Image (cartoon, rainbow, N blue to C red; front, side, top):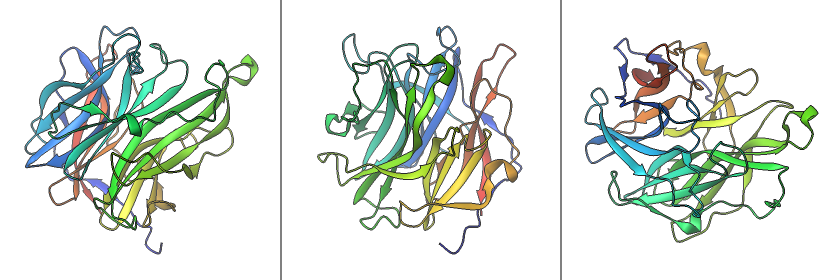
Amino acid sequence: MTDLRFRIRPTGGPPVPLPTRRFSVRQTSAIWLDGMYYLYADVVPWDNLYHPNTYDTSIHLFSSPDATVWEYRGEVIGKGQAGEWTANGIATPGACVFGGRVYVAYSVRGNRDGSGHRFLGVSVAEDPAGPFVEVPGLRLVPDDVDYAQDSPVLLLDDPCLVACNAAGTGLGDECLRLYYRRSLNDYSDPAHRGRAIEYGIRTRATSGADQAWGPSDLVLAARPGKVIEAAEARWLGGRLVLIVLGYSEGEMAVYLSTDSHTFAPAEPHLLESYLDIFMPAACFRLPGLIPGPDGQVRHLTTPGDIDDQGHYTQWVFPVTCL
């Protein structure tokens, strides 16, 4: 890739908070479809035992005709019943439109308190507001880990879905690609404090909901002893933009690709180096890009506190991508 220049700058308009009803709004993923913005989000009730973390939670929906006035639409993908694989909660949505339908991926919690293994699920709907139905063939529960053991613990988390053309060089309806964090952590020795055996961002692809995910490929590896988490993946023009968290000291790093697989650091590399809109919040910064009707991104979300009790929501900022 020859052009690695990338910028997002605020346009100067006031930020808009997503409405809350005694809940906090954590990670979001947005789509544009049929004249409306739809934003899928982790919602954490204020009385949740694990607030501000998204444990024992579900996926909710907000919508807007202009990305400035948002309506809360309620829960759209809930937890499963006792004994079902999603009974302990789902979180970290990643949404996209593929083949005219809405797909939302999410992390499935192993235990209500966030401990244990985590896996990935995908649900699909004809309408952005649902009803959503899980696609069992797109469950991601790898068979290379002994799940009967307490350690090491496999975490599959932070899914991002991207619709691509067959070549993987741009937006299209031939390939649905998943980017996610895979980490293998050893908690058996307290001295290791959850030493990471493996940590990185991986990708898989499928040609449709009736096909299983293809092989897993590593696209970004964490530096030794560091954490890396996927926050966002979006086509902007002819480049796929991947934003990851915590690459070295908690920053947000930007990577670019023209083939959906090979990523190079953007120039500048860190989102914070040219975007200063981030506010104090009880959770990670978790930026989200909101695509518009023409595919351009003119809004970005990032969490911020709304009171002194640690309650927070996502704020929508008008931006320009360069």
